[in-house]
Image (cartoon, rainbow, N blue to C red):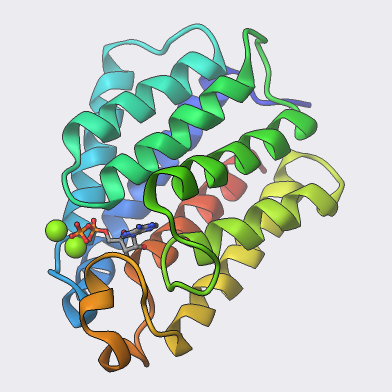
Length: 206
Ligand code: ADP
Ligand code: MG
Ligand code: MG
């Protein structure tokens, strides 16, 4: 069974609840190696997504993902807003005109999201950014098998491990890179939020 526009809207609402619940944690992660706004930035963006969905859920999953993208790009400042916006925009382009997202389309959408983040931010795996969570997630999704929930759970598990891996890395992109070696020992906030979002989508798909 796939995920239709209503299902994707519900998943975004669930993600908004998770972001709100982890707002303080993301702020603290960003305080250690950045400017302490990641939780606030992301929460503002997802509150705006919920408000947009309240005003009306678009007809197709692609249109829902595009609404999320344009909302994040317009409402979230800083590095993460445009990066997440690009991720949703590229994912949206893979969802096509169909009424349902199935596993092959989800795998393509995750790959496209990663490519979008990398095209925009130029980060590679090991730079201690959200790419360290999203890249292994996209890879795990492509080999997982099973239904949407199983594939998203594999992606979220890989993203958790990827986020954990950033603790030992020297950041090479974004604000945290200004700290260099002094940032070692801290998890990247964007990698953590990517893992949280994927977990929220996985739970929503169950
Ligand atoms: P800002 O750093 O502008 O305050 P946020 O705090 O909202 O923005 O987001 C910071 C997160 O953005 C970082 O933890 C990192 O995961 C991500 N990030 C920053 N620059 C890049 C980049 N060039 N490529 C990928 N991700 C990045
Ligand atoms: Mg910040
Ligand atoms: Mg900032």
